[in-house]
Length: 466
Image (cartoon, rainbow, N blue to C red):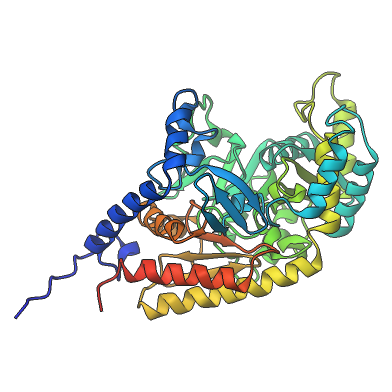
């Protein structure tokens, strides 16, 4: 009689229900399989290491958990083809940058048209006026400016608001993500604000001008605002980068009232939550922000971003500029609002980010979310699934986290990378940061079914055998 091998006791809550010994053996096999499948990527990784820091154009590209960087040959619609000839279903979509699919036809046509007509002049174009009108109609804010990334857009709107209000402090939520604007890299550790230890090269104390509270914590928000020195609250309407954290019912209505009561302004960063619908999460849920930031997808993947202001804030911002001494404002770059980006945004807003596209994306995302729940239930895992429009995520906890601290506690990079690598080897690519998946207009029901089959197979190999 064979005695069953006991399942090792998990050392982390995120690994409840898993057989970690099986998971480690699975990871070893998947790493070998990846290396065998991708010899051309491996050769290019060796070549790139000679001259690229960390061997990649951006060190984030090493965060996929692969033995070496995957190299892409082309990307179209919902698919990516790597240099070894494998076509992968892409549910990462450039971590939202290509949320409306790779190389969408209207944007491609606009870029081809503009390619022989100039790229940048530091002058206005007819496209800019149309884009301003499109943004105003879509998001309900009358005045707009442009940037090269959402990071820059966040940095610029905070500067404008500080100048307009005469206040210096910024309030953010613990675990937030607003690109690499330095001001937001402050976390709560044991209830105390601490500058994030991973931030490189920071030479002054960010906690002097940044206040941080937990998401969904109205008493903490009120106490922070009561000091009367907060210029603005910079927030995603749903936290997305530490794992999705939804606002509790009534949170934003009460938060808006507190922000107005204490003379601060509200900035909504919709770079990820534009997945909700054509006007973003804020407009869909009645959040009336003083300013809005949108990056990545607004140009169909072309580097660009936008930020909008209420009429009142625009008047105060213009006055601040007029009253300031002459010279560089510290806002904008010579490539801001360049001709190529404006043409891409006009095409994306007018012909790509359409109600019909969203109807397809949201419906298929609901099917994906339900399918993941079914896979999780079938394997008896205590995980949950959250959906925000075309954005779906599973987290290693029974119920969705309420704030950044709770979300942080269930992150498990080792487990995430193990799952992601297994999916990648099975032809499905999801975002390397936590477990986020996006549906684009070109994603099909067949694509979703393939992802679900791959996830089911991966989980079957890291849970106790049945």
